[in-house]
Length: 460
Image (cartoon, rainbow, N blue to C red; front, side):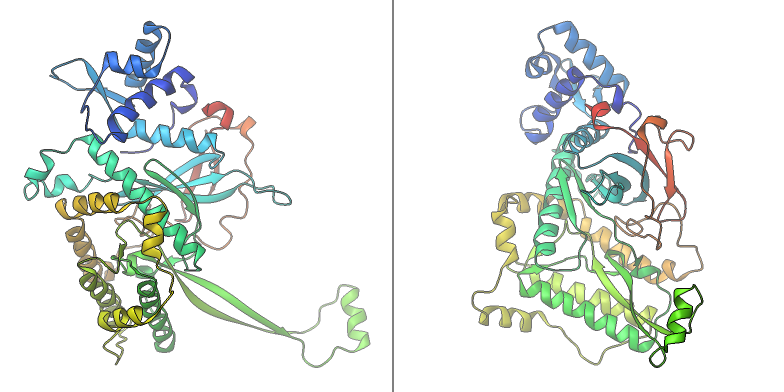
């Protein structure tokens, strides 16, 4: 399902009310009431005075493929499509001034799509719009690959159920990312969450799996920092659950130290003031800093299978560093038993798993989402990706293809300076995703990012 915003600016307030009525009845209720929302109920819930106006809006939405009529149904009705859910989420983001315009899809994974978007200008003195990331959760995409092993489960699941699960997945990721960011963990900055979408900051760096070579000393330092991050997460009651090379972005940070050879004499100062250059000894130390991404599978250390997930996270890093950088640590740890013992000894420590539950993502939601992941084989799919990384990723195939094969693998890669100019003139740009219809910027993947310009007034 591709994000197509070509109809967004043409929808009327009546169209939005009808679309929201279908979404409330079908998605927010988790399909407990209707798999297909009857047409009379849509008209009633939209609160439109004229029945003909509601039918006109239904026709408009159906033509735009935002809602769909189910063939051979027992009654006349419609269901919401993922395109309709996308439009409702974007509409809310535009209304809240979270987003200014949308751009290209730069990553397509088994459970989500990643888009470059423009956020409104920052407060003065900053006046430029800035790039950020829109992550659209699309659970249910891999379910059809495992339909034979999960047929009983899928028999009771409809498209609305997948949308309901996508909403829970987005809420979980945003909630965990918020508490981690507030606690100082190296994660993207969460900006907004609505329905099945999450808006976050763009991370400038390179996915760990794209790094071909590291010196032994640098590999050892990075390895130690990643293991320390796993232990630190467990120390606040959390386990990532998918801690591997695809979910780690490496930032390069400069630590320049400029020193002028000896104290400059007065004549040299005078020359510099007149534009003549002096010799300086400038050295720069580049250090690698990991940024953690992708949190829908994160779980509490109190989970019955916490030890298994913790050991898997540790093993993924050990295996990758051994095969890619030929680095192996003499320390067999970290061990879950040691972390658990230290956590029990600590009194008054901040438990983020408890904070997340208190912030709105309840234990009931977590169990519902966990049940989905187990039944449709999300963990097995992750294992397949990890095993593929050991072989196919080491080949000579280029890594700069426009679309990734993992949820966030190529989502947040950007070269230095690619976000320098995000200023866009809405008056000169038409709606669309074609190169001649939008303002183009250099995308993180080296291709052209074209933004679909939709002002807040136009999207209303």
